[in-house]
Structures are given as C-alpha cells and as structure tokens.
Image 1 (cartoon, rainbow, N blue to C red):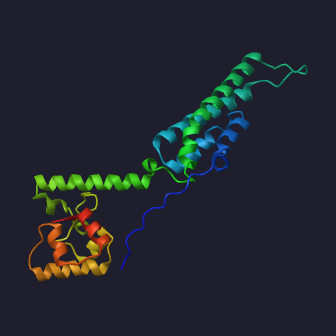
Image 2 (cartoon, rainbow, N blue to C red):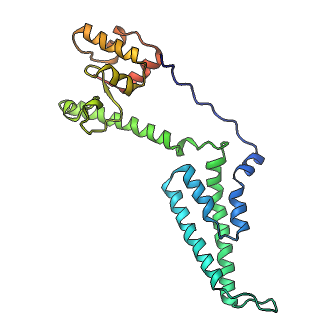
Length: 235
C-alpha cells in the first residue's frame, strides 16, 4: 500500500554567515569584475527561480555587460604619464560601471534572499511545483463548475476520463463511476488495490455513487486515499 505523503520539513533559518557564503558570490563577482560579469548572478537566479521577470533582468544585464566591454575596447590605453588616452570615454565607462554595479547589487539583494534565504529552498510562492499544484486545483474547480452548468459535456470532453484522450485538461479529475481501476489509481495516486476495491464495490452496487460519502460507506479506505478522492473524484 502506498503510504500517505509525509509533511514537508521546514528548514531552519540559516545564519548570516551561511547566507553570505551561499549567495555572497553574487556581489563579489559583480564588484570584482567592475560590472563586466554582472549578468552571471542573474542567470543563476533565473535558473533556480524559473521566473520570466528574472530572465528579463538577466538579459538586460547581459546587454549592459556587452555595452561595458565595448566601451572598454574603445578606450585607448593610458598614456605614459598615467593619464587616460580618451578622458571622455574613460569617464563614461567609469560612471557606467559604477551605475551597473550599484543597481545590480540592489536588485541582487532580493534575488539572493529568494535563492539562498532558506538554505537553498525556493520560497513557496516562487516554487514552480507549488504553482503547478495550485493551477491544477484551480483547473479542477473550473471543470466542476462547467459540469454543474453543462453536465452533458462530461463524456464529450472526457472529464474525469483521461484514458479517453479527448484533449480537455480537467486538472486531474477522475470519474469513479466509470473509470477503470488502473486509471483511478494513476490519477488519484492511491494504491492499486484500493482502486480495484472501488471498482469491485461499484460493480456489486450495480449502479453509481452520487457523492463521496456514499463511496466511502461502501469502500473502507485509509485517510490519505479518502483525501485524494475528495480532491479529485467526480460523480
């Protein structure tokens, strides 16, 4: 039997020293390279957080880095007396580098906290796994509302029957009155033996269930399976 999922452990807050060691390289790289590699921390954050706005920042700083490199290549070398070969370009380049460094460090403060602030754990509101789970739940609710308005669409759209492959995304619902045992087990992530018990009880009943309460009276299930069915079953 598949055990119920364990609650997620909440990691302890890292110390200030751990935070610096984990994400301090964002600032070190940006400052030590005079802004020429400022885009690297943003690309790292984008790969960890998988957010469009962070990727946009990474692209913007990539453009800024290219701009600084072009300015550097255009600036003539220093004269023997130590003065710049082109004071105007040197001033523009210096001010541009300072601007990139300051703005990047300000923006990296928030990103570093999101990437490293929880010992490497992405905050819940930024976690793509959580986002997908919430989107699936919202989709299931929309599909239930659609069925309440247009019950005749259930078979046409294949709601609750992913095995029919009708192409409609119902968010992961399962029609326990018609679906095969293996499909019930797969969609609800319950033990196949429990899914088979549901189908056996459905056959013995010779009819359909009208709600989750009726099903649970006929089929004794462990708490985790009951919760999975409450979340995904339709009748």
